[in-house]
Length: 618
Image (cartoon, rainbow, N blue to C red):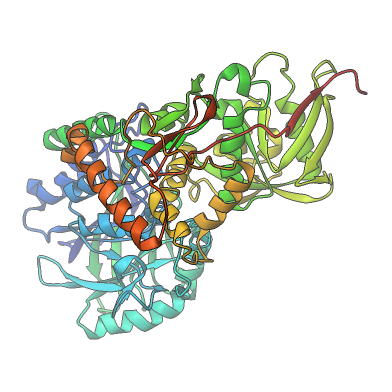
């Protein structure tokens, strides 16, 4: 095999290893990239197969494979499939055990549980207790720990651990009964149990940022954990702690892989690890079977772009000539969603974020619309800056006016006016933050794309500390969600199920993040209600049910009428039980060519004067 191995640590011990391990973490794209290391599951599989099947390893223990979380999101593909396409990719690799990452829950616990049931390996999570999950189970129906037997009979004890910080940034509805527990305390409880059950080695699969991983490794008692295999951060890292535990994080996105040979120490107290890093570069040949799988996954995603996900009752103005120089109803909608999702003080959504360059007419919205309008792979992050820096950022944003510009700042939580005839850098006149004058000495949290947090488009004020800037990172790129993913989650949250709950006057879950977001979005952009005349509008429509099965996608047109018939029967029965008078229909026509449908609220983004252009004011 071509492509050299990079030795990370070598003990110098000779003889066959007692165990062989493969490790990777944080993978999002099955397809190959453009620059080395190019990654891609086909070349990644080639390297995995090499360590499992090559002649030089035939008399050694079979290599065991472990994954440290984050696969189901974020990516453009996951916006379409809600992570379903990654299940087959992960199963194809041959994983023995995994821990969950924060992005596994971007589309909710129910979606994760559905996909986890289709996985050929266990997802482990030991320190997020859910009283409703059952014995030895945690949130997401994850097992707390597991013992896996190697091919030579040695027993490997595995547990999964996560940090509290990313849990607090999961913006889907979490049960109020969830209880996060300190990783050190949980490890002190579970690791001895695994030893008592015969574990020869104990491995912690973690999904935590480096400071928390290092605090864990240094804080556990000596000999409690032998090996910590981490995720969440995307850098390759190796460390040995004073507890004797070895730590390894293996890059990201199928671009890196770790191969570990483990040998018992000669005194039988602990383990020695020889570690090799493999970068998945272009010169590595693709595994033919996996290459065909990757191509099929891409084709499946393209087919699903035609899935319906929402409905707009008004035209959505995403033209560059609009978003690049003045207020836009669609940009208002996107910026509001960014701000509310992360509970930031404000949001800055530049014209460069909105690439649709068209007016979307009233009617159905499709996954293709989201992906085409928001094709970027960098997620929304949150930074903290001073009011003075925010004002300078707005100055940068309007500096190209009257030319439509990618840097033009569409906003939420902010109202500002500018004089487009004044000298660039001196154009901003008034700035209000949530109804009050901007305080240049106050701290404000700003939701924006990670692109801006890297000081792109002249937004030096948003450059985070890690890149030499003055902005504090509140929600990192690893924790963020794509704009397209936010929109997909939002539309899924307002479908007819939630509407029926509201009509039936069921109490909303006060802990639901999306209940809060929906309430606030409805205040800013009141949805259109069905007309009273019950007139049926135009085409027949069905909701995005989140299903991604190929047969359902291919037969959608044929089944639509059947599903509508079922929907009508259910609606009729529900109407009778709820005591609703009249005959609400699946779609109703409004004035000015606007439509609403029964399976989801018709969004109606509006202009509210948050951006004002003035002239001749000093």
